[in-house]
Each structure stands twice: as structure tokens, then as C-alpha cells.
Amino acid sequence: RKEVEQDPGPFNVPEGATVAFNCTYSNSASQSFFWYRQDCRKEPKLLMSVYSSGNEDGRFTAQLNRASQYISLLIRDSKLSDSATYLCVVNDPGANNLFFGTGTRLTVIP
Amino acid sequence: NAGVTQTPKFQVLKTGQSMTLQCAQDMNHEYMSWYRQDPGMGLRLIHYSVGAGITDQGEVPNGYNVSRSTTEDFPLRLLSAAPSQTSVYFCASSYSPQGAINYGYTFGSGTRLTVV
Image 1: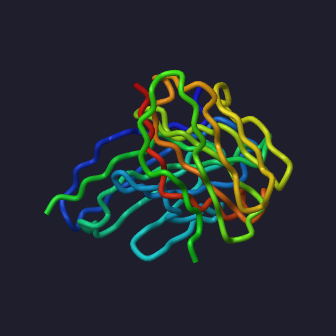
Image 2: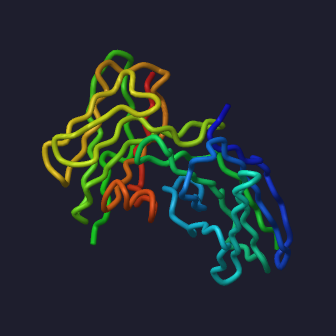
């Protein structure tokens, strides 16, 4: 079983749409959660951390459901520049490392 | 700030050759790691280090060696390249092991390696 699982997509949405990604993680002892963004042929970059109470950064909202062990990312008013792959990331509770999901690809269409 | 610098950006090797992928950071980060990224597999941890002189294996360590003689540098050595090692390699760092958990990583720009 993979530590982190994501729907690979692709998600093709028009500009201005709202899109949501989910991810599930396998180890209930994980404590830290992130969403990273990766552009084509580039390195991953931290988009936002995910806190238990949920958190928002502009058009992006991240939520954590510990009981169901899933994390979500909501993007409102999608922009062309949001086109990228979004990686769900969870810490390895047994070591100081991070597990990365395979990513969900988003394409925002004009 | 240079951040995390990886060299080379591209490399083609023949099967059986050896090489070293370089990674350097100028942020005084204690924690450094190497990941490989393959289609459909996501990023997988190869080796990591929590400080100078300390290294440990990740999920896919076979065929790779690392050392951490200084805080700044964390080279990854391919001992005898195989086609299965064709991948994109990313070096990542964080202020501390706990910092990695709290704040995530800073990644280098990657090395695209092809083994023929």
C-alpha cells in the first residue's frame, strides 16, 4: 500500500472554475501535511502546509480530515498560471522524512 | 541566495559507468536528502542526512552511495550505472530534521540522468 495516494488526473478546467483535489495517507501517526506544486520539468515547490483546523492562502484552501486520513486542496477562480502538478506530502512518523504522492495534474483552459 | 544547487543538470551515462551528482546548499541546513522521480512513481527517497558525518538509507538506496563531510555538500554517487537508474534526481534540504517536518523542503532544480 502506498503511503500517499492521489488521483493522477488530469483535471482540465476552464478559467475561473473551482477545482478540488483529494489525497489519502496510510499512517494515522503522520503529523505534518503539505501541498507542493511542480511545474513541468521543474522542481517541486512548497505551496502550503495543511493544518488540522484548515487553512487558506488567497484562492487556495487546504483541509485535513484525520479521522478519514485524507487531505484536500481547493483552488477557487482558477488561473492559467495554476496549471501544474500538485503533490500531496505527508511526513514519515518513523523518521524525519517526507512521503510524496504521485501528483495530480491540473490544466486550466482559456 | 543560491539555495540548493545541483550539478550537472543533464547527464548521459553508459551502463556500468560511475558518476557523482553534486548537491550544495548555502542555507546552513542540517538536513539534506536525495530523491528520484519517475513517471507514475512519485518522488522516492534514496538517502538522507541529518547532519555532517551522518547518513542513512531511504526507500530505494541500492546502487547509490552518499557521504556528508560538510554541512554544505551532499553528493550522490552511482557506483555502476544501470538503465533502471534513468530518472530525474532531486536534492532537498531543510533547516533541521524537525524543520523538514514542520516546514517542508527546499529542492534543487534537478539532474536528468539517462543511462544507455
